[in-house]
Amino acid sequence: MAVPKRKKSKSKRDSRRAHTKVLAPNLSVCPQCGEARLPHHVCKSCGSYNRRTVIEAKE
Image 1: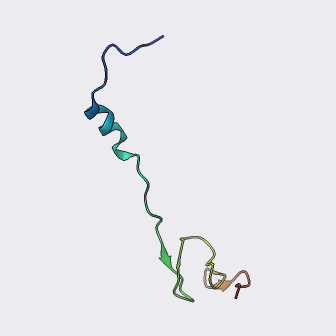
Image 2: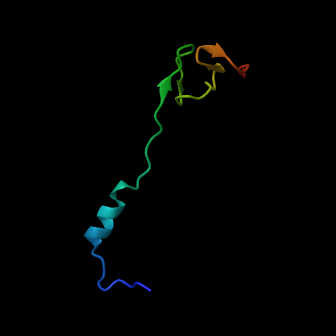
Image 3: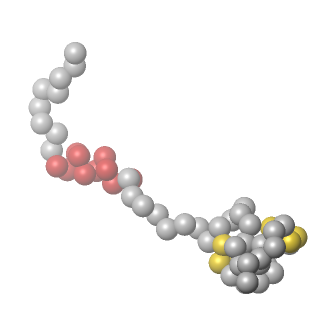
């Protein structure tokens, strides 16, 4: 079984973890109501997708 011969430095460890981070979701604007929504998802406020009403919006 492979065992490390030397301890990895904090610099090596932290540079490996540099790409592991939480990103904010990319938001787009709904063309019908102007609210922020996730791309390729139904708008929660007006219920439209691809400029068509897919579900009835809650009031």
